[in-house]
Amino acid sequence: MSPSRPLRRPLRRSLGVAAVLPLVVTLTACSGQSADLTIYSGRNEQLVGGLLEQLEQRTGGTVEVRYGDSAELAAQLLEEGENTEADLFFSQDAGALGALDAAGRLEPLPAAVLDTVPPQFRADDGDWVGTSARSRVLFYDPLEVRDTELPDTLDELVEPQWKGKVGYAPTNASWQSFVTAVRVLRGEDGARAWLEAFAANQPVRFANNIAILDAVNGGQIPLGLANHYYWYERVAEVGKGSVVARVHYVPGGDPLGLVNVAGAGIITGSEQAEQARRAVEFLLSDQAQQYFADVTAEYPVRPGITAKEHDLPELSELQPPDIDLSSLSSLQQTLTMLQQTGLA
Image 1 (cartoon, helix red, strand yellow):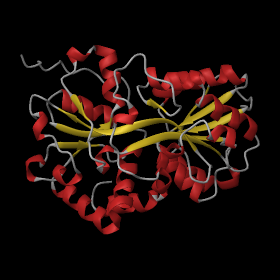
Image 2 (image 1 turned 90 degrees about the horizontal axis):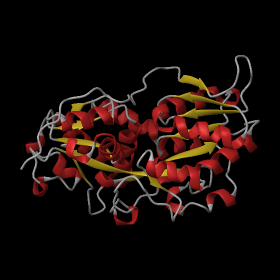
Image 3 (image 1 turned 90 degrees about the vertical axis):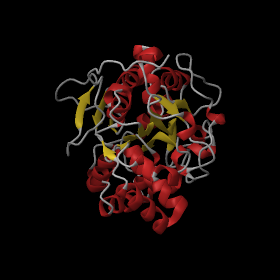
């Protein structure tokens, strides 16, 4: 018997942060009191706020967190330069970290920190380290799309039968890093050609990945480009029987199956570099890695830690494209190409 369509429900949280100035949250510091550590976080507060509270308890110092979009925060850090108050950048994706690294705005991390993570999840020069991993996937409506019809490549996604039927989130950092990966893997001309074909196929714009999931789940669109963990969080919240949408992991090393990381880097010139280093160590600790596995439904980057709350496929079973995440640093070029193709 086919699953019935669930009643539409309000969004649990919004990940679309468009404000020029980031939201500032001081965890325990009193008014007028300087924080011991200032974090610019491109990760949403409702995803990682609880973890950063644990960080404050672990380090014993006060932590101020400024939340915003990863790309916007990276641009702000570049603009602020040596005058920034930030000590640590906690990014949603490798691209924003790479952009700061390329500009010389990140300090090298100690080898003892880097060595806890496999080489593919850290910067080649050791200036940033991944803290959790996620896979790009397709959310799909099984009431509208049979498994045998699911696209398995970029080029299949722009075929005529998907015209006006694919959701994407143009301002989301993960979408922008995905496009950067397409540029790296296919070259500038190949990426532009694909983006123009995608734009001509009239994809449907959404504010964020949760809105995409809601649209697929509610029958508004049959397909959506997003990250895997939103679906698993929804299932944990309401039960699999109440979620019509399903997840398609793209095989064969195609860019549609990109595995990216959230990560952290210490800001060059920070007066709290030691505190920032301890914060990075905490994000790679058993406690934090288990949080990513069980609370945010992401993949831990530390070997030997597995999810207890979500039935995810093993990270080793995925078939992402062969790409160096350090090469995703050309964020500005990606944003320019997205603007030129009408997909920004």
